[in-house]
Amino acid sequence: MKGMEFMKSKKLIAALCLVLLVTLCMATPALAAGSGDVAGAIEGTWTNA
Image 1 (cartoon, rainbow, N blue to C red):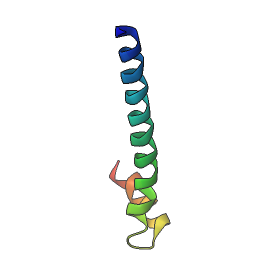
Image 2 (spheres, helix red, strand yellow):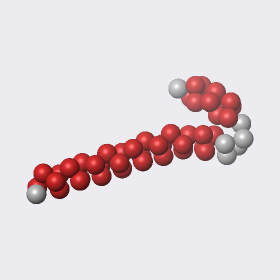
Image 3 (cartoon, rainbow, N blue to C red):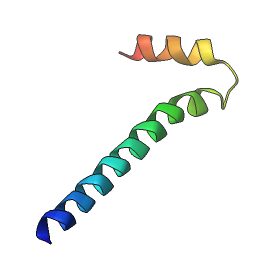
Image 4 (spheres, rainbow, N blue to C red):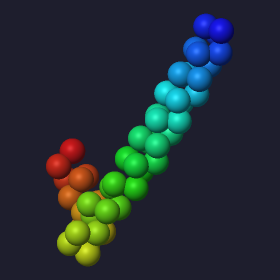
């Protein structure tokens, strides 16, 4: 029975990591779209680095 519980928690952790990854991928365009100038936002990240 302990093996089954471990697999369930492993699947849950994998699903949460996937949700976090997708959320982070979608957050960058949303932040850039606030001003409407996506190209300017991208150029700003290069000048700040």
